[in-house]
Amino acid sequence: MIKPRRGSVIPSRTMRRACIAAIILAVSATPAHAYEFWLRTRTIGQAYQLRSYRLLGPDLFLGRRRYTQTLALRIFDVGNLSEARRRARLPDRGVRITWQSYLRIDHDFGSYSNGRIRLTELMRRDAIDVIPELAESVAELDLLYGHLEVTGIADDRVSLQLGRVLVDDGWGTSAIDGATARVELPDVPLAVKVASGLRVRAATPLGVSAYELDGTSGAGCREYVEGAMPGTGTWQLVDRDRRITNTRLESDYEYCPQREVWQPTIGAALVTSRTRGIGAELGYRRTWSSTVGLIGPADRLDFEDRGLYPNDFGQAPERGINEERLHARVHGELAAGPLTIRPHASARYSLLHATLDRADLGVRLQRGAHVVEPVLEYFSPTFDGDSIFNVFAIEATADARVGYRYDGTVRATANGWLRRYAGSVAYAGGLDASVERVLTDRWRARLDGQWDDGYGGRRVGGGGEAAWRARRDLWLRGRVIVLGVAPDDHRPRYVTSGTVLSSTVRLGDNAALHLIGEGAHDALHDLQIRALAVLDLAFTPEP
Image 1 (cartoon, rainbow, N blue to C red):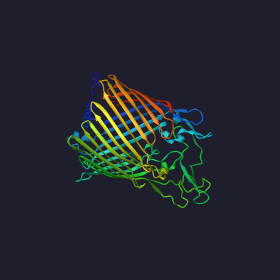
Image 2 (image 1 turned 60 degrees about the vertical axis):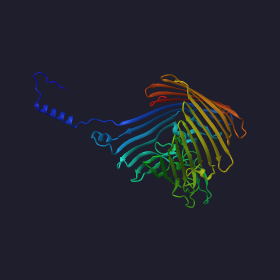
Image 3 (image 1 turned 90 degrees about the vertical axis):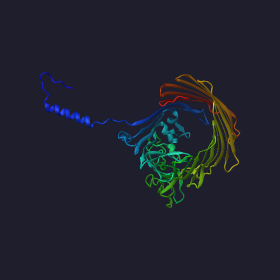
Image 4 (image 1 turned 120 degrees about the vertical axis):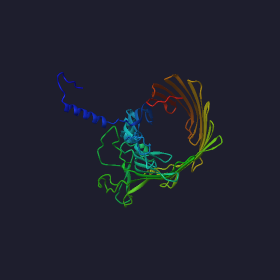
């Protein structure tokens, strides 16, 4: 505030302007409202070695030094639409906008990803050239999902997701860059879900190779090289007739054109809604991609190039299907006195392969602290329509499993399983069990046992674990595992053992540091060690 000097007079016009400006600011100013948000971050450090076996000379130990940073973010009521309705004393029914995302940063500065691999006596190549997927851990920023969610449309009957959205058919999760919508149907307890966009791939900006369809690789990619006469060509490694520029952050040698094309995808599902005691879903998904044509000048090779794939007679289609599947699942819950029964069944049919590739049928029975769950499962491997694995016959498997759990003063589990390999008489089966008990307020102990036998060999062993809360802010744990292995291919038997020591140090109300050290030893791998450190900023103490 400016004070007038003694004897001076502030002009009345200036005073009036100042008062008018103050009134305008007071009337026009509105309170600022910050968005509500939820944030969780995790920092993980790992240091361990992997053993590389060599026929000549000593084995080579390759180190991994990994740093991983994750960030999960959720912002509620973007635009303050819900807050504005509450301030106006209106019913909170209307559009609500939420943002949620999950980012991950990976960096590996060890010799495993940054080293070189000897292919022949005269040829050595960078590890990420031989295994391009390793580049994701050398230096990578991934967006696993990130989208706007708009709900409350049309009286809460319509919701939208826009951005990188996760999609699921019951057995696997992938992501699309596009949109999904859910529409509640009037008068019937059903809803329709639709999705459309581009499937996320390793070559997608901020993409993840884990979302790739099974059966494709980023290395050793081949192209069809035409011969002197139509139909006499051969498959050879892609040759772009260029000089290789070395880089340590990504593969600069391998080139897989088909893994870089867009994969449009659509999906639709009919699901139950507003029902109690039963839920069901019937869905469809289709993914396709364009056929790669020329990847360079047509005269770059000895004979005229007609494209990446054989096209001597114009037989290469403009596009092909990568996946086309139908899936169905149903689950329910009913009570029969003190017994709760939860049946479930799922199935998936690949229209591309004309085969049922996944199915399961089971029921969960619970009475008090006792739970029993028998399950039948079937699995037949299917792959990306571009994969050469589709021409190989891979055995399907059928499993029968029974699980038991008791949650009382003593926590106990037991599981038995039997697997049959289709097309053969080979079987495998096993049993495992565990018992855990809280001994005192500070001590807890656990024992485990395992027996597997049949196709593949026999494994018998067990383990023990103890946990001690030394102080209010310090937890100590130890675990020992011993397993005897008898391979079924007449190799010698051996015993493998492992030890895990871990500690949790509480740093604050919601922060803790987890330290983990692992060691394993057997006649084949000798000694292997690994260390992990996790900074947890959303820590919840153990019960």
